[in-house]
Amino acid sequence: MPASVHPVILCGGSGTRLWPMSRRLLPKQFLPLVSERSMLQDTMLRLSGLECASPVVVSNSEHRFLAAEQLREIGVGPSIHVLEPVGRNTAPAAAVAALWVQERDPGGVLLVLPADHLIRDVHGFHDAIGQAARLAEEGSLVTFGIQPDRPATGYGYIERGAAMGADEGTYRVARFVEKPDRARAQEFVASGRFSWNSGMFAFSAPRLLEELGRHRPDVLASATGAWEKAKRDLDFLRLDETAFAACPADSIDYAVMEKTNAAVVIPVDIGWSDVGSWGTLWEVAEKDASGNAVRGDVHLRESENCYVRAESRMVSVLGMKNALIVETDDALLVADRAESEKVKDVVGHLDGTNRTEHVSHSRVHRPWGYYESIDAGQRFQVKRIMVKPGAALSLQMHHHRAEHWIVVCGTARVTRGDEVKLVAENESTYIPIGTRHRLENPGKLPLFLIEVQSGGYLGEDDIARFEDLYKRE
Image 1 (spheres, helix red, strand yellow):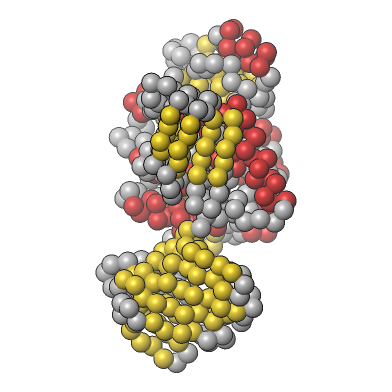
Image 2 (tube, rainbow, N blue to C red; image 1 turned 90 degrees about the vertical axis):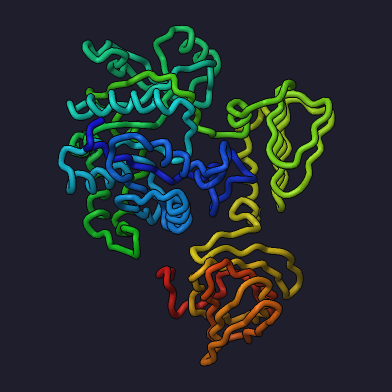
């Protein structure tokens, strides 16, 4: 494996078809959907054993601390963590990564990987990467095609053209085809000439930039402007918001791969899935003798071919067939497995009716730890708060609410106005409306406390920050 391979991990995407688990503040790439680790962590660990540079990570600003914490948990440090101020699809993200790599390794090969895919045959994947890297160094723009095992209508397809000669198992791309209807998908699979489009790519940094300049100079210009005006922010590189927001939203496929005459496909059979829906998760999951896949505290009787996931309580299923049942502590999805692609319509309904169940879970992660909503009513709200060892919330103030803190585990250092004091287990303190305050954990173990808020407005946007370790606005 050439040492100049630079993995580029794309952490965008909202995963709306995997609601109620996947939500805007905690989308599917950060969830443990197919193993005990998150999809991002599995993607990173899948690179173990490759001779490659430290990965380039691209995420949106909203998820920066979540992604960084998950990488820290598995001991992986990126060469750079790029923050997109707004989502603009994969082409601008790849362009920025190419600019970064070219500056440090002019002949470097980008291996572009979404952070939310499943690949079971890691050894076969590594072999394909080695083959792709060699082709990329020679000037090809390589995509990985997945050997289809059924006429799926949820994937795009790639038709193979002429073989590449000396490179066995590699082909020129004849054409890309949008997601087909079932009849066309059956024709594609029967022909033996088509692969599913995996959305994974390999190309040298200068070659990608050259092709972008030829086919989408507007994307390249905006991405370059955002890159040149980028600023360091803690461990992150924050792209210029004005320049990046002006960038057209386009995928690598549309911007480059469908237009270039240097596109090459390597068909692979590596146990791949994009884990795009609950139906797909049922397909890749281990099942019992009746075809049921379960996770959590689930009791099944006389049920067949179901996917059942219980996150917070026992779920009992009687006499169901081909059902999807996903339970969280604040939402429940029950659907026919054949309708799994339509879950995104539920998210659209929630968004259109100004609900919040598609935005966040009851547990909301923050760079200092997390909080969980326990109860709420007229003029009050109760939360459980966890603060990591050594972490601190911002020095802040609320205009419309007071807060009562009761420490249940650990010791808190509390700033309240000009006063700083320690609050131990079974002790409490009160933060009046309009008082500057800060909560810190000076200990070596997590700090847990109960917060009772009271006041006329309890929204999370009622906050004025004066100092913040994490440089949030």
